[in-house]
Amino acid sequence: MKRNPKAELNKKQTPKAKLIEVSPAMAEKMLERNVHNRPLRDHVVQYYAAEMRAGHWLITDAAIGFDWDGNLVNGQHRLAGCVLAQVSFWTWVVEGLDPHSQDIIDNGVKRRPSDVLHLAGHPRASILATVARLLFYYERNRLQGSRNSQISPFDIAQVVERGGDELNDAIEWVCRNRIREIIPEGLASFCKYIFSKQNPEKAESFLLGLKSGLDLRKTDAVYWLRERMVRKRGANFVANALPYVWKAWVYHRDGVPVRYLKMQEGEEWWDIERTVGLAKVKPQAA
Image (cartoon, rainbow, N blue to C red; front, side):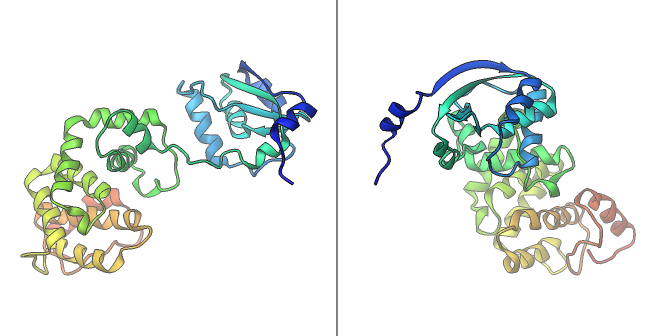
């Protein structure tokens, strides 16, 4: 027999909502009523705490929810973030929910950075979001640890604003030249933007050579990068390819001949300038 939500409202109290400022002490008390919930995800708590400390937290329609028995059914990560940050935040609090409402909370489609950029009127928002994410971590020397981290929409917007027309021009160039045939557009656009700041002409020859494979010699790092990409494309392509792309670029930019392309044991992407510098002094394999 199907449940009738309106019938439930007749038997139990009607949910009531109020807008309040939740202090860390209040959040701790609310969490004492968190007796039946999904596992707490530490990285989400850390993200929310950072947003609250930065003053980025805004009031939305997402409420802290309690069922008609007084148990917390929604908002444990926000409350834990408040306690961790030791910062108060304003939020809607709804009491009197059906306990079964917990089964359907957060089952919708999560809003992504690309959605935020699209709503702000940016063209090619999906590609732009990928580039902005890579730039955010590039600026912090954390490119290889970026896959499972969350970035605030505020941070994404600031990266896009700093990139300005140059960032959009890089994306348009990549799309116009169909670089996606060999490398995802987001990664290619990131590379075009960063590499062009170092050597615009070689940035274009690097990406065009990577796409077509024409006129590449076996002493050119682009040749070996392309060979690797053709063989190794997979689910973690961007994260796995980035160190090799970066190393091939530095060799190509500096005109250093190589016999093959590999990362040395323990070598991080930010070490590449140093290792290529050594190769220029004493020629060696990449």
